Image (cartoon, rainbow, N blue to C red; front, side, top):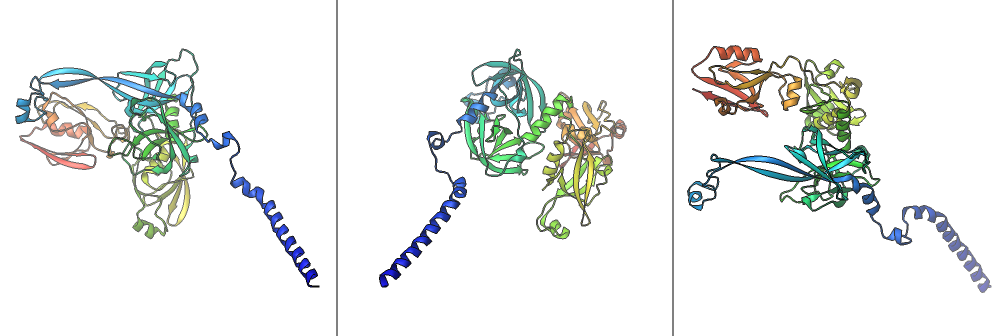
Length: 481
């Protein structure tokens, strides 16, 4: 009897165990999709090699040369004079000596007919540009566009109708922090080098590298010479152009920055549309003064987290003003992309093609509104009236112009009204008083509104001159007797 009871218990227990086992087998395929044991050499030996073979042929090395004129003295380097006057003795005068400076960088072929993108600082002041492919072929290159505000440049080489390897741009908006990326370039001139890392951050805007300050941050090793090279996603698309590093030693510390591919695409499109000039490409102008949302402002607006851009003022010709934007509005998004600060809003607008509209999501008095802002070039109005000043006064030999939105963008000015110094005769006395890019605020206590008013004031003459000048937000006063 007891044995029969035990047998029944054993059978019940066996059925229970078998039921659990079959339940486990049923759930196993779902588990296996997430965690797979490598099978075979291909799965065990994971490698970026196929991706590198796909992209690397389109990444080139760029060598530049420029002639530099230097003043030298026969006393330079003489230990007797240096012990009294320092090592810089004699550098201010003497004979002129010319030398050839060489520099190395990287670039990316983006079209099979030989169109290459690189950094503007890689080819700055270059008199000769040579492009070297990974297979050793060399081509003379010509700069077809240099856009200093974005630190991007376009080169073209004559391929003699031969098709070159090239890469495609991929929107950086598709990236997420933590995604794997490769950096390909020519660091220190040692030859093409591939490094790997992840996306450390997106939309970095607290830097001071170019006019837009909107970057992809990566820990893939980037060193001098990598500038202009490719930041590559795992599907082979180029998501950025490597541009700068944060370093105290000159080498990589795992903090590198790349210009997003959206800005690269904008530069290429503008060049093809003929929307470029001596100062780079023509970009959409907003004509607004904006500030980020601080915790105090966020609290007053009822925001749980500070975000958005507060409109503090607008130029009378601003397209945003014409669209209905008002001072005190908060811009929350541009073309469905959230904006967190003025730098991000500026970047978003800079990638909008001229002649089209940008959709602004605006918060006004607790209500969300949608406005359509025209993407227009900065107006060259009022006329700049560029004038070379001459006469018996302190500004003889100085070329000045009225500041308008177009002039402000070209010269990188924060002011959009007044008179700016365009150039100074390097042989005249005025070079000791003013510098190119400075804004003349007042002369002898009289505010200067335009070039006509300045010329009229200078004609009066004076025994002494007192000028108030402004540059980069800092004012200074000059008194000449």
